[in-house]
Amino acid sequence: GRVGKAKRGGWDIGIREVAIAATLPPWRFLDALQDLPQYAKITECHQDEVWEAPLGADVLASSDKTGVEMFCVGDHVLGIQGHPEYTGDILLSLVDRLSTSQTITVSFAEDVKRQLEATSPDREFWLKLCKSFLKTEE
Image (cartoon, rainbow, N blue to C red; front, side, top):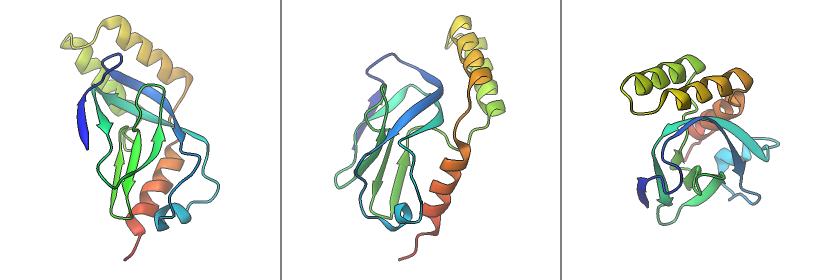
């Protein structure tokens, strides 16, 4: 694939809603998930993005900011743009460090903090997805 600096808007920090693809490939780790949501919120903290998924990859999710939020190559590779492992505390710590180092503005940091007070990622969904992928057997 190809990655690079985000083409629209620079930093992507906070909670982003991603759209799960309407048609998903027949991979076992996806079969194990019942009733996939149409959308799922995930924690984001990056200024780079996937421009093109790797050859042979299926794009599983996208957002209004990033065309490739999640992809897989069969049951062997799963790529997620966001951070399903991040807690709110981890994100707040990163936002404070980025703001203190003047990598992002104080107003941007405050906007992210307000967003975190108003919403949260769908951690249960991401946990199930990742566990299902890791349990996939040959």
